[in-house]
Length: 217
Image (cartoon, rainbow, N blue to C red):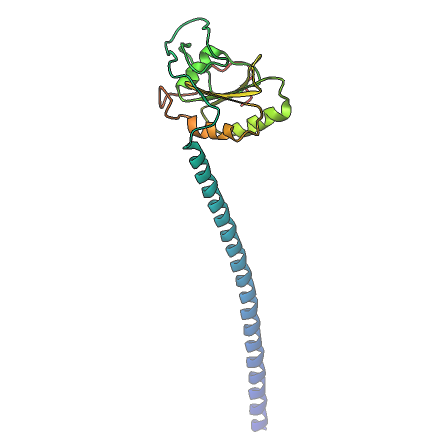
């Protein structure tokens, strides 16, 4: 009887050990699947992030390379004056690229109404780029220009009545006129001349000045 009981105990222990071993094997398999899946997700995220970073680095390098080269079609005006004056000023260019101007600058941003020449010239003295457009170019073109400006600082975007070209980009002493918001030279102009070497007062603010009516952002 004792031998029988002993054998039964041994059999039960063997079956229990087998069940436990099977459970452990199942847990190991589940853990492998779980951790393998997590690892695959992490690897996919790392690859995706790496591709985004590499792509952005490549885009930045291409933009820097383009900005380092002369921009076709740009007009230079090296002898503009820079006195602070009160009242209106008659400018030789429309829109102006420099000259005497009001002591208060136009705050940078996107405007849906025209902004004053005398204040916006001061913004360019501080390193701003002023993008102006014919109000008749259509909302789709205006939206593209607004997207181009994006979150960039030191940019003015505004309509300019009676402009002799659909779009003009101006910086201190410099101007580029184009027919379409899709013209790649506009982005290059921004990259090259926002607080670029032409800036007469580097580090000066483009906020804390005048905010005319019609500011959209």
